Image (cartoon, rainbow, N blue to C red):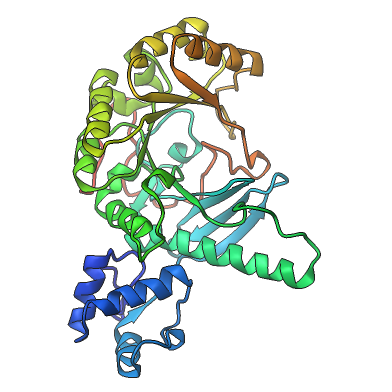
Length: 383
């Protein structure tokens, strides 16, 4: 359980069994946990005083022993395309980011799992910041809870002023959550899995497993373990069709090469009855974008339940890479499609506020864990 100096337990991030155990410590029955989850996640209420169907005595005990505490907002940026990026406080010096991407048929929230990242992928701004610490389950779930409340607040304000027409559909609500922000989720396994359970719990955010996506750079043992623990959509940062190039772009490949990684992916689908694995592939000019490399990628994936998401590279200060041109990306996609591999091109969003894929940098100070570099092929994993 997440506690602070006053020993008040933060209820955000406690999966239902944990919350039932906490409620039992307060002398109440398990159904109180379900009531609490409904108030916190369905109605977005953080004050026990407002939870009016709970007994006064129980609310008084909650006030003494518990709280609902989301990360604090440090700053907020809005993109011209409607994307919103929040910088959130981790502690006095550290901060991390989350991004909301509105679309006509969905609202996707991209959340972080760590302050920084130790995997050192060469094309990613987050990796260049180094790594400080894992986020707690409360900080992970708290991002979704906070975003839902903030989006509802904005919607109410717009409705009152009538200055901005209310958008149609779900584009101003969180309908999809992707763990594609700062950090490697599977390196924070212990805190990420309970958070996933809250996202999908009927009394939590009640999201379908297909609407919660975990993206990993390829921590193979944790993919096998994830298959035993929970069932979410799996995305894998592949970015190269061969080990030589992937060793350079994604150094964890030196420990878990492509063949080993793909075997783990197909195992995950078999165990979870999943439809497919999404393979993310950042398009880097002159590095991984040739037709021959597309054909090599197709040979790896053809005949398997896979789809490829081609991501135009989003530059950041100091990078040596450049984005592949649109015709080159289209040719790469066509090579895959012609060989029976489903492929799409991701539309870049939030680039003007550095909120696009690979651009999240947050504020990572006092790095306590060395980055995974050319001489290091291991990474600390919290299981």
